Length: 325
Image (cartoon, rainbow, N blue to C red):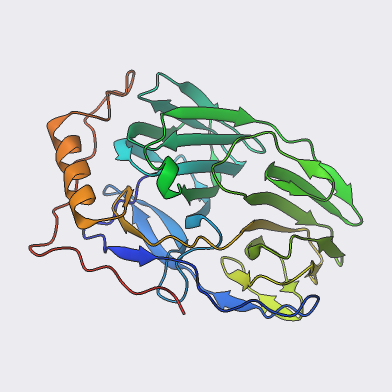
């Protein structure tokens, strides 16, 4: 997915450095989303919880868009070819279907419960369009920052269908990392956790987690509490390192759906601008020039339309924000 803001801000992102919390007594920080239109005159709105001023990363997770359910017959997803550098994209749907094409030559369908992970280190471009058969579109789009030693990694695309695991009154699908006895085979460049967790009405689930990880629980639906902290749909509850268990409760009379993200703090500072992750203003400028000139990123075959133009850069060097505190 593209960041289609017409005036994207440069963000300096890094670990929060808050020292963690005592094991078993998590302190939950609640992050609210902001609504962003996903391009075009009939733009599909998405709710963005990462990055923001309060917190820019959770582990290497640096971008989180949550969208739907929306009527795709009225406002579907049409994201023309656009570039990425220095990151991996994670597509995860709850309903609907999206056609993915990229400059690696991949032509794939993104379906509910199926992970599609694309690596765009040195540079990749892709398009995303909801299929004609899609009536309701609903899911999340996530980005993972690549560490410095791998930020120019080769293009790659991985697909994985995780088997659901039952834990008490909950269903867990682990698409990255390990949780509840389930491990994803998908390759990443830093340790990560990504899982969809669906709780039955009234269910409480306690999960053993890695104390070296910080975690974020994104709520899609339900009356959810993380530890003793209530979370509304579209909110994300952040828990720092040092916690060995997470307890999630669904207080509603309907199932609750959440997405759990985690990873060790990402100690490197990065600059995010538009769809690029880099370490300097000069790298961002070069990536933008390469996209506008039609070099480096390749051509997305099979998409009927023009690629997204890059937004204008500011008239002065990008001034990254400070790390989240």
